[in-house]
Length: 218
Image (cartoon, rainbow, N blue to C red; front, side, top):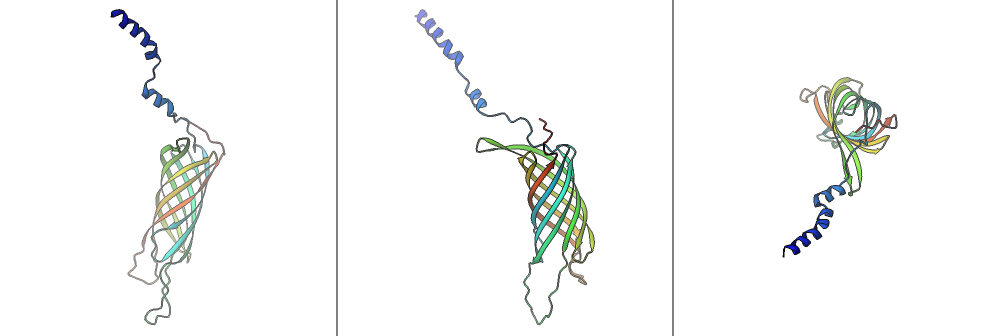
């Protein structure tokens, strides 16, 4: 009986030695995410985007934006940008009570701002279990000047957040949500309308980089 047990143990040893742990097999099937694919460090960034303002009760807007920035490293950058606003009235033009002329509300026409960018988030998304899409998330804060349709200038403060998605070594696409705070007398001669304005905007666009080849780092 002892001899039979000894023979069984000797026969099973080779099979046990060649067996793989299920956890190890799973790890082998999961590729390791290394080598940063989307590097902005020491690169100039050209920005172009389209968007809209969200909460002006008097006008509906289309936004045309462009800018240029520089990234000191992967987390910190500085951007100069401008926005031109195309608008149409959002309120109904209906004559009520014999009025011969409806009020015309002043609106912003364009702005130019300088913003500091901080990008604390970087990652890669798995697409259909195969290819990876690199992205980063960033915050914006800054200020500048806004001009209305009459040419009057006022200061504007901005805060925002956004994400980039890598399209290639020299390009990304992005989305941004931004808040603007400024003062503007929307109706000349009115003492009831507050001059303080707090507006939100959404922008989609693309970014191009120089030099076109990034300085990769892990």
